[in-house]
Length: 410
Image (cartoon, rainbow, N blue to C red):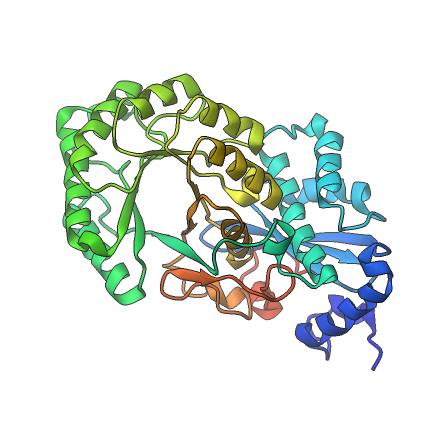
């Protein structure tokens, strides 16, 4: 049976994605193993999740489509559209060259950091999905193979009373007992009711004790059943961060995340080296060049790049390789849909120093409806053996949850 490739863009087409993938990959194999395939189009749409997820699709003349995701941010779709002419007619297997090409061509738009890197990341992830489908290998194989068959997931937890230690402890027990996670994270940049002036970033002793009470309640509630990290969201002064980290040394803290603002890496190093509490940083630093100073200065105990924000899958792999030179593990920050979450799992499987991937949407009941496959089961992701990322968008679910004004892929 021949395939009408025009139907690939039609969510109501008679062919299933699995039927299409089998035959279209066979077409690619006949066309020089994929070296004759050309990119024809790139499209985006935006899903209204607990963050606005920008999904990216790269189309080819062989009928094979790759799906990626960019970190949320205003202007991402416009930047992807701006880059389309740089990629049309190119071979999608040349991921490194095409990514570097985008960085160079978008230098005027600020491709060292920020939303331009985010847009590049979304395309880069889609290229990995596409290349895996063309070559008929899972995405982790494009990164050198895998160290593990499943990826640990840590659940970012919230309660209606985030400042209440008992409420946090109760939620920790629920997530462990009912949802099956053995890794959690809670926020510490919550009001204690004792603040005098939050703008100065200073923590008074009574505020530090309140935060310590949250840590004590949560870590005691889940005991040895789960690792627990705590996020500060770049809130405190250097001195306050040091005092807080020292106060938490007696508890079993997996890590303390982003205790000081992200710009000054010298201060970050001082905070990290002042305490035995593990310090995690990295989600607001772009590309391997940005992460380099944190690692070379030994300013971080655990590095936390955000894959659809930092530059994509290969860029995250390069950051992990640099971190491994300093014996630093990687815990990927992640607030994404199932698409970029699975991309992070593939990278996590392919690097030796991977700790876990974040999951930020456990309160969103339809998160896993966006793809046909099950992604997270009892706190772990089984690494797919299907070509590419191994997830298939449910276009009906995507359309149901579009951001107002967004349009579904053609």
